[in-house]
Image (cartoon, rainbow, N blue to C red; front, side, top):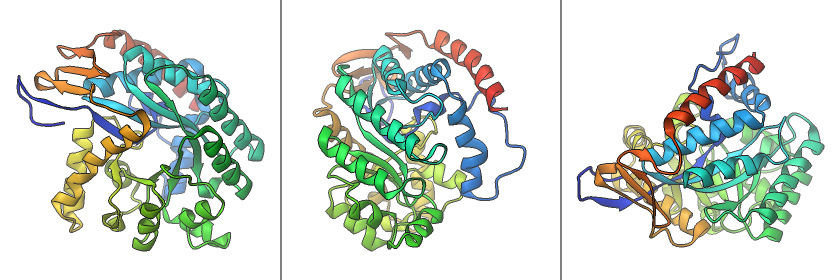
Length: 354
């Protein structure tokens, strides 16, 4: 977003990687019994407990809250990476219905993984991607093929995800090199890193989206760039999870900005990017370009975004030419009702987590 002012007009922001299912997490999510000491323990004790506890009602409440508040912050495009292992079939429709209700653009796919139920779980996740891509007719919603991360899937699942993406003519969306454990796992399997493993197995068709890339080196980033992949930096999440900073991203011209489950306030994410990036010796103009590259990703997924705009000092937002926020309020939905329903479902969700 640009500077405020009654007559200003700037493009809607793009959140190039996030997890809409995390929408209820700020409403009192229980803390783990033991403080996590590593990235894997953060996943196991917090986020994987949350996603396993999701059901249809809690997911819908999370999606409505996350997407409604995204619009209120001036974000008009969300690139979502979804997981709800106890509720796979039909889960993408729930998120898509929430997006269509509030009036935001959404690209979403189920992140296939084997971390709970092995190959059967992965096949179910890919089946949900296929079903959704074939059945979705919502004008503001696009389908993706998801993989959780290289370290939670077998070679067979990566091959199947790549084949499905080519069949459906859509990108693969995957976490890559978020933490050192992803690199170590790929090396144990005989690859230089997760990027090489994904590419060798055919899991990265052109236009694919690699989230994080913290532990990819300059050569790997350049290879991803040459393969026509988008890379997505997530500064607040990487800082919170203590996974490091990705200096090699300066070698790519296709780095967008995401929030990885943090609220979709892209002005806040850009401020974090500048703060953290400048502290790591990055050039301000290089960092600034990352906020703009999200728009290129949005256009690759949706075509023209000319009808997405923020005006009136951020109090009016249009998506595809339709005003969906007016005077700081959602037009298609009631944000107070959304927040009240979210609080109710959060209590039930957190009880299941406990």
